Image (cartoon, rainbow, N blue to C red; front, side, top):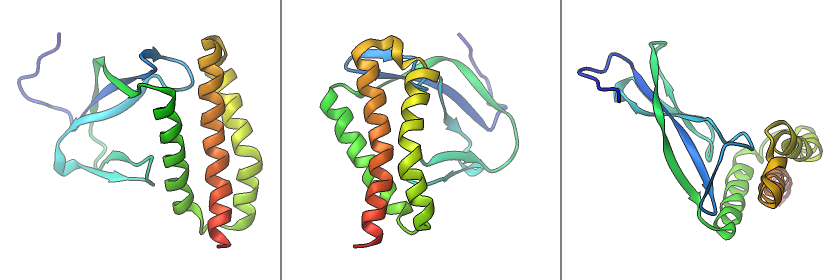
Length: 156
């Protein structure tokens, strides 16, 4: 076990191990889900677009990856997973609705199939059986809904 007398790094990174219905998954591109969890507060700022904002260190000083995992039981049930997908699709759609319509149409057509291919094939979701298909399908469906709803909001 590592101990620190003084933190000599601007931030400490932990891998987040995501759970779905009580089981940890290292596929789908979910692992290692590296997150800075401890940092010197004056040296970090939250940036990005909700729901995928992240901490960005203001200076290019070293961060350190710690051993171990944060056990992230985000989705205890299939229903909680589906609710989160809906929520994230809506939040993202509201943020991107002002984008160019051609950009949104292009993303609507191509992003969801690519997301499924990346999660299911490239990140080995296929080896997870039905849960693998379920997760990859609904992750790609979220991407489709994000662009579909952004177009819908743009014209309403």
